[in-house]
Length: 177
Image 1: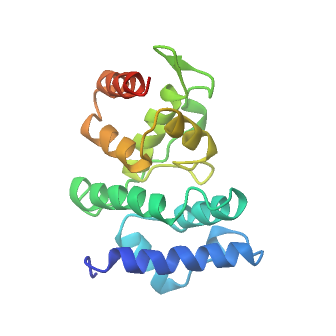
Image 2 (image 1 turned 120 degrees about the vertical axis):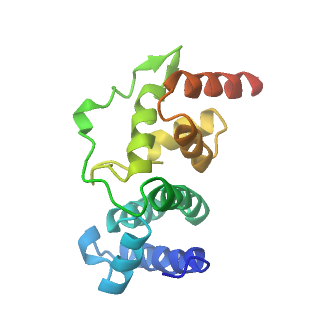
Image 3 (image 1 turned 135 degrees about the vertical axis):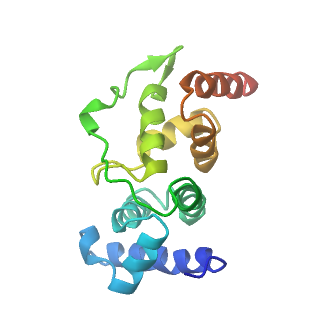
């Protein structure tokens, strides 16, 4: 695997997925050839990750966009290669275990939901039915002026300390006023 060229190769695969979705092709399992799948797997990514970006890109005016996708997947890749030593988790988050979309902590809606989603994203444990940086996540991140990859990095730094994550969000939110 060539690490230096990750961003360029990721861009090619991202653009490929966006174009296929725009042409009407559906299903993450139909988008990539064996070489592309091997690249994704070697970097801790899945076809579903790229499919989700392509779907949202085409349905939400280019959001979250290549730049956010690259930044998010670079954090995921770093976690996969360095914290997981290149070994994929066999665990998948049970979507029913997530807090409701309207749940709040310290008055901040969505935060109880996005924290475990971000942890699952880092570990490569999101089910195909969930996307980190989906429309709801983007609304939350925009409302609190947080770069999506920045939040993922924050969660990594505080994997076992949700209070520190909430404290950081409160501080960021207060600085916006």
